[in-house]
Structures are given as structure tokens and as C-alpha cells.
Image (cartoon, rainbow, N blue to C red; front, side, top):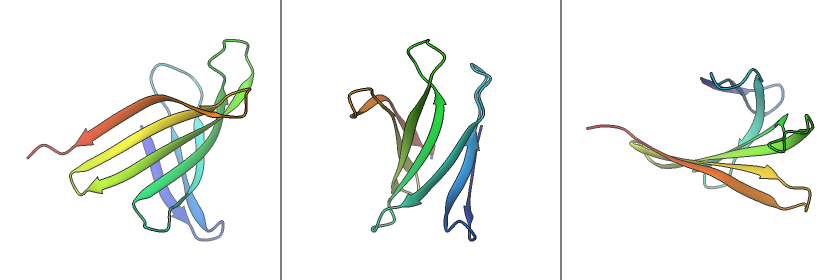
Length: 94
């Protein structure tokens, strides 16, 4: 489940995400791009390496239309590069 809203004091979007497959509550902070079509959310969470370290993540929500959104998730690798690990297309049924 994801929650999102705008925090006027922080002047950024904030939110949370939790899934049934893990116990970590993800805390988001992010912003819209200049065209207001991509919301990028940053978070820290458990590394996928299994070594109990924390890692930096970002989710980008692209608003293609009122009926279509694309979410891309990335993790910052030890090489300093962002690595995509998931892309989801959300489409409203007509």
C-alpha cells in the first residue's frame, strides 16, 4: 500500500509504502520534474544483497495519461550507478 501527499513545510512530496512480502516501512521524499509528468521518490531500504545493509532507492512514477502510469524502481549500486529492477504499467480499465 502506498500513501502520497505534498508537505508544504518540506516543499516536497512525501509518502510511505509497505508490502506484504517484507516488514520494512519505506519512507518517501521526492519532487515532480519541470513538465510535471514524472514524480521521483527517494527512499532508503534493505539492500537486496542479503547482507543486512541499507541501500538508496528511487521510484519514478510517470503520468502518461489519466488512465496510464508507469512506475520504475531503481537501486543505487556500489558502483555509484542506478540499476533498474522493476517496471510496472498501471492502466485503468475502461
